[in-house]
Image: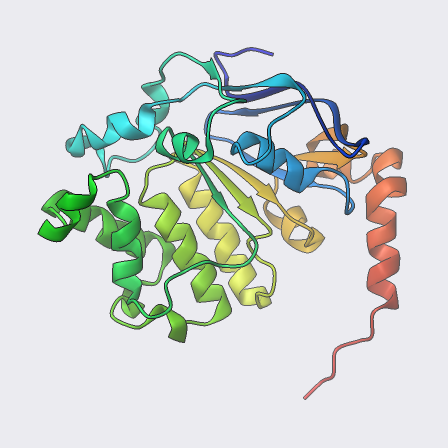
Length: 288
């Protein structure tokens, strides 16, 4: 693996729970500015991989090399660079380090952010204030009483515009639709300027129109960072994925362009074939 091209390298990582191996000497990497989709059957190790990358689970062996540690904090020290697009902070890389033993909060501060499947927002706060709270997470607690400086205000405005919910800025987050809450949580992560964004089933429960909009949003935000998406919606994956990694039994079963991966006999047998069988067994939607 070439560390000059990778923002993340998961190398020979093993994780087991009560003797059951979830990740089995797994090797996985993500390039700078890449949108990578991670698919596989239930129990393949996808969520555990995200847990390991974010420090929630410590591997029994192996290393997690993150080549971007410290960049998020560095960007906040240079406000003139905050809204510059198209890979500026990808070109200001710092030395890589093994983050396998780092704490979760430390990794967030150093540029790794994660969104879980169920949106987690502050329902009683406005959309604007939700993103505002996220924007100041690196500031000392006492400084929060002084309100947001112009730099952070600009970041919040820009991020709400980017995710397409600027028109809901004054509404309570609890009044948003499920899809809008998903976009709000993505905004709350983006405003923290992560270098690596991990999204766990971001389109689950969305309408087809909302899923398409989310896909276009992912194509936009990956211009500034690397994004890893765990997803089971194969129609969504086929539409927006360029490179796909298929996990099975804690190892990489197949990896490459979606059009080639979906033709891999091993993938069809282990995952895609079962998806088709399950889809055909589901009742057809009721037409109104």
